[in-house]
Figure 1 (cartoon, rainbow, N blue to C red):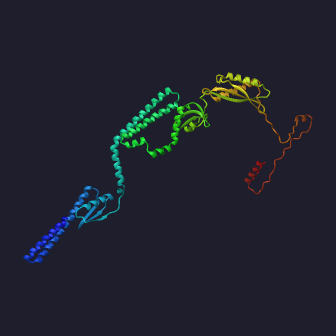
Figure 2 (tube, rainbow, N blue to C red; figure 1 turned 60 degrees about the vertical axis):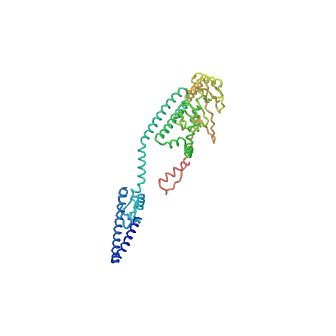
Figure 3 (cartoon, rainbow, N blue to C red; figure 1 turned 45 degrees about the vertical axis):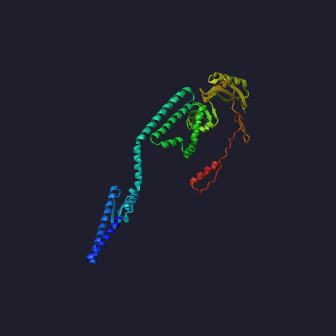
Length: 445
């Protein structure tokens, strides 16, 4: 606008000067001279103005430090951009500055459009730098959060041990004591984790973790359903004292000694020394046969005596042996010797006796009783015949008294042995195949 006013003033002054010169002398000559002077003045003003625009823009771009490879030229109000700009953001900023510069008519873009790998990675580098700066500022808070978490973990360990010692003195079930002590330790850990998040400045995350997060909580609940069920079952097993360490139990056909009840399952040690881990949900929902909760256990075995033997005599011998083996064999409840069934060659007596399952092994006491009863029956002249067996021959047997025939002087013929059957093997097959064929045929016979 100022340029237009200046030009208007110059034209008006020329017009006034021309009018005065027309009255004084040669008007045409003087007017041409003034017009030439005005054109020269306008050209000088344009050249100065272009240089001013260029100098002004170069100073701005140099101050930012973002355009080391930028070159610009200004001609007749046109700004020509050459060289290279690192990224699109700095290019857009430069164009805005040029548009706001007074005297600029238009911008001619002759920039190199290729983008270097540094410019592609620049946003990521800026973001990493920003994160690093923020982390560095929060470093003292993070350190204090870790220290706070460590303190709570230490407190949880101490309270867990104290609870375990206190409950051990008051209760007999170590499984329940262990479960309660673990709950105390987990409670202190969760509390310490919450306060650590608060101390590190992550209050929103702490509240979210403490209150649960809708769908995430449901998803985790479904994914860890079996884990939660096993843990709850372990608490119920401990509270109801269904099992104790060292007890001999039978669960779902698995028999062994209880070693531990963890959050996942119950561990049994079978007679072969193998560890059997049964999920707690199966233990809690299945029938449990506890073989040692009542220390008195009954064992039995069968002994067969001959039909000609006195049953009462045999019973007396067996009862005498069971009394001699006391206290390994319990007198209360009393042992029983009863007729079980009549076999093919024996009268089978079934012997029932009781023993202390906690202090006496079932296998050892049963072996000792059977061995003692067998020796006593033999000494008491009680027979224990083998089962009768009937052998049936398909053809009649010829019985010949060879010694009597020799004494009578009869001539004996040796038994006729039939020769082995012969087979004709073709001669046109290889020797190895002959051997195979003959062997197969003999096997078939």
